[in-house]
Amino acid sequence: MDVSRAVATVRTVREFTDEPLDDAEIEQLIHAGRRAGSSKNLQRWGFVVVRDRSRLQELSAAGPWAGHIAGAAAAIALVVPDPRAPEAPLSIVFDIGRAAQNIVLTAWEMGIGSCPATVYEQVLVRGVLGYPDDHHCEYILSVGRPADPVRLTRPARAGGRLQLDDVLHHERW
Ligand SMILES: Cc1cc2nc3c(=O)[nH]c(=O)nc-3n(C[C@H](O)[C@H](O)[C@H](O)COP(=O)(O)O)c2cc1C
Image (cartoon, rainbow, N blue to C red):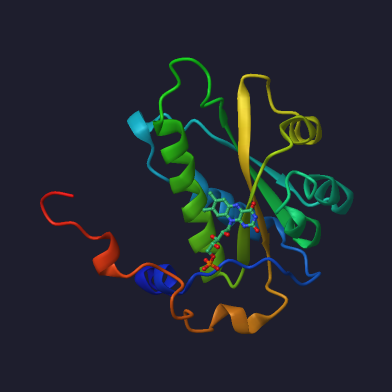
């Protein structure tokens, strides 16, 4: 799959088969994340991979829309130095977004679906994952093979994205 096709067709997947992802597949996803360019090449990120079912269930309580984690083959927690710390640069969040999209697109190419979960229950997630106090996890990616494989090839639904004219500005806003 070429990049532009992956960009045009990737969609969120929230329901997964029971089939696990093997170590090589997980490593391929994390390689994709770690290869992202980052501000000053600082690479301020860590990826905590969870495959244990009971821990996935615990993480599915991370927020009101995190339930999909419970049925995922794996969760990839995106952990960064706390971007809310005084003087923390906004590039931390830009960089982890780039890494996340690398993971999402590489997964898509591999026939693996994904969905972000926004972490509201910070104490719970810190307790499950054990990252240092000065680090933060705002998003967790669920990954797994789609329960409905048609999702991998289904055409984009009309109206799913703003049109070019809605977002493109030439020269000035
Ligand atoms: C920053 C961010 C946070 C998101 N948080 C959640 C979430 O907590 N739970 C969830 O089910 N989906 C979450 N999503 C997925 C969005 O709902 C999804 O990308 C959007 O609806 C577009 O879906 P589509 O790609 O299938 O068209 C999140 C997406 C982003 C980019």
